[in-house]
Amino acid sequence: MMIKKFFAAALSALTIFSSLAGAVSVQADQVDAPYLALGADLSESEKSTVLNLLGVDLAKLDQYMVVTVTNQDEHSYLDSYMDAKVIGTRALSSVVVEKKEEGTGIKVKTQNITYCTTGMYQNALATAGLENAEIRVAGPFQISGTAALVGAMKAYGAMTGETIKAENADAATEELVTTSELGETLGDQSKAEELIGAVKDVIVSEDVSEPEQIEAIIDDTAQQLEIELSEEDRAKIASLMEKIGELDLDVDALKEQAKDLYEKLEGLDLNITQEQVDGFFATIMNWLQQAWNAIKGWFN
Image (cartoon, rainbow, N blue to C red):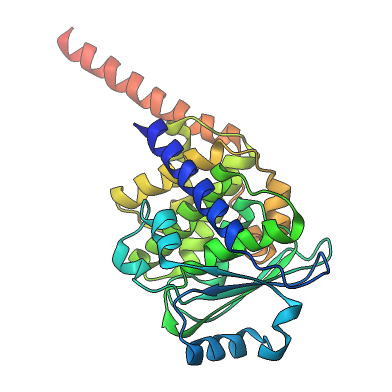
């Protein structure tokens, strides 16, 4: 069942990227021209507001590569992970992506976006494989901002000529949604970003793939961050991390692209090692052995 869901999500991602590719209007000659993805349902007045917030001069649109993102694109890509009510019925959020020099990392600015924080975009896009880019996201008024994720990933691929792998795009989407939902549950978006980032760090750096080990890392990290997780949230994070563990990610690249988050995590002493994970299980096994010996003693 999980394999079927994965391939369904991957196929959905490929379908959307293919459809968006057909909608691209290349209006700039330079390879590194900024890329503008506009919500397809913006009215003319809303488009003017969004362009102003994004710092885009309407008279200079020919200097951008432009694409529209539809609400159907959003639902096709996001329905597997979030309530349709959150996605909404109109694609309004828009994004500008500009390639930056090596070592810049991913920088995100948002305006009128309520569901996704800058850190959530940054971490998810790093998982997708983006590097050294400035991303500006805006809505004409307070909106969730989900349409921007599709546009940002497609924009980066168009600028660099690099195809974002379907499995990376799928994991990035699930990461954005899971982190956002966790932030709402905890009432603290920063804590949610830190928890997901810290767990992802260990999963990637220690090449952890066993579900039991992933769960142990989640529990230990949550305890160190003084976060109490519900079983539902714990299961969602575990599912996400199993997917991330299957990707070919470089932990140094993740830290380079999401610098803001990992600089905060460095001061929290959250560098859980494989030895600590193994030690956790050794403690559990030792406790079970002692319990079993006690039970046998009662019968004897």
